[in-house]
Length: 268
Image (cartoon, rainbow, N blue to C red):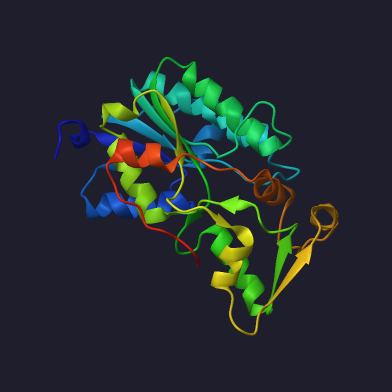
């Protein structure tokens, strides 16, 4: 084990999908880590962390509620994460943003992710910012969504379904994050966190469906209306923004930097 990894890794959002899998990965590799609870960010006094060399920042929301806005969670908590790093003398932060993050996006989610990226870039800390596509694994959001629809024997395809996904496995994500902790090639970079295969949403669903499951299309306009008015509609507004955005990343760069061979994901 390298000298750096003898120090502790700090993690925010360790109870989320990526966080749970990452802590299991660290447990298997005997990597020391400490989890920062979300409630810590609600206190006036920012917690101090000892012997931590890097903070992996995973807290974020993909949908807004009346109590939780993108700015309040995605942006303001990132600011506090930077404060924790500086007060605790943590020199590096790893952040999961989103494929499609942009100041010019029509999506409030992607704008909030871009704001968070800028806060990190201007913090003076070393950083690695990953922009993930759909991360696939047990209990991930997309898998649970599609499986719920499969149980009802009908999967809804918003729009044409020809827009592209580049899903990446959670196991590969954990490996890449672990490499980024130490490898200087990841220093001060924004990197697309995408899988090796580009697949249309329609084909992805066909590969995942069962023989007795119907694939039903709906226009994006109608889907957005339902997303705003129907509580149990399978897609939220930001889900539709992500799908219609047709975002594609540079997997070759990720593979070259990490030296890993990635799993192709064609279905769930």
